Image 1 (cartoon, rainbow, N blue to C red):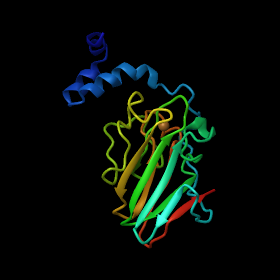
Image 2 (tube, helix red, strand yellow; image 1 turned 180 degrees about the vertical axis):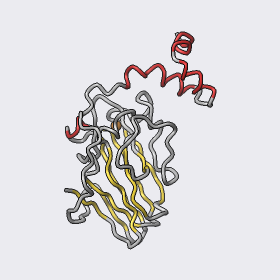
Image 3 (cartoon, rainbow, N blue to C red; image 1 turned 90 degrees about the vertical axis):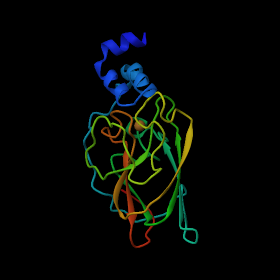
Length: 203
Ligand SMILES: [Cu+2]
């Protein structure tokens, strides 16, 4: 079975050669299931950066004494964007801001009943590629495990906690790395402020 796959899908051989090993096999085996059948059509629509007031929602805690921000982020918490959202936000329509130098403890939970999702701090894209190859987060530790693999990323009703230091001010994104998801709008803005600002803007 596996040999037949390798013969049929030439790229699997290349991935194995690159050291992908078991994950390359999984990718090949699940490739048919990756197709985002219910993907929203408006794949590249990008909202303007949110202009609303900065507030600290219930899912964000800021401890200035300990220089720590805690984020409780759920994929698919609401039906918005086919459940491909973070805490109900998608297509960049919310900005999470944390101060430079703070430790970020991000608890990621997948509330989507049917599909795996992932999360990580990425470049400030305005449009996303359909797939990611071995994505590396902006800050060490700022990405969930097996982020591109629908069979191994954060499964429905599972959670994972990421801990990282927001060591460099700038404009970034938090996005899902499952094929097609970020392109279909599964991303929010993630800013690291140089002036101590923290909070969430939406709208
Ligand atoms: Cu996703």
